[in-house]
Image (cartoon, rainbow, N blue to C red; front, side, top):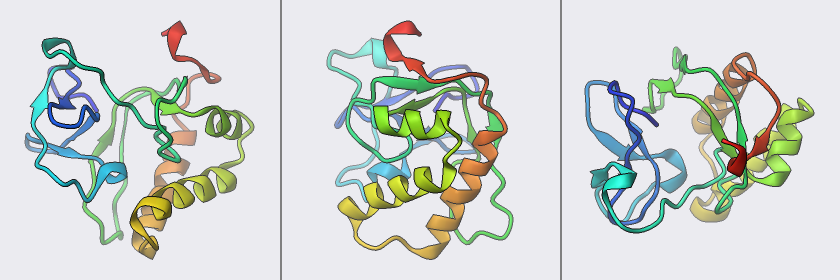
Length: 153
C-alpha cells in the first residue's frame, strides 16, 4: 500500500509490503497476519534486501503479474473486521489468479484467496470471507486493463 505522500513501505524484518493504516502508521496485511514481529516500516529503496511480494489474491510467493487498477476506498459498512481503508493502485497476481481475474471468474478468485489463507491460518472467519468477496467486487470495477508481467511495469 502507498501512504499519503505516495510512498510504499516494506517491513524491515520480513521484507513484506505493509498496509497503510488510516490516521498514520503501518501494519502487516491480512495475508501476513498474525505476524510474529511488529511492522518496522521502511521505504524499499532505503534498505538492502529484497521486497518479498505475495499474490494479492491467493498469497503465493513472488507473483509475476500485476493487475492494473485505480485506487479506491474500501467499503467496510456492516462488516465486523478492521482492515485497510483503501486500495492503492495495482494488485500483484500469480499466474493462476491473473488468468482468473482476466477471465472475470471472481468466485474462483475468492476460492483461491480462501485456500491461501486457510493453508497458513486455519479456517477463515465468515466475516473475513465476506470482506474479501466485497473487496474483489469493488476491485473488479476499478481494473484498468488486462494483467501484465511485473517486468513490464
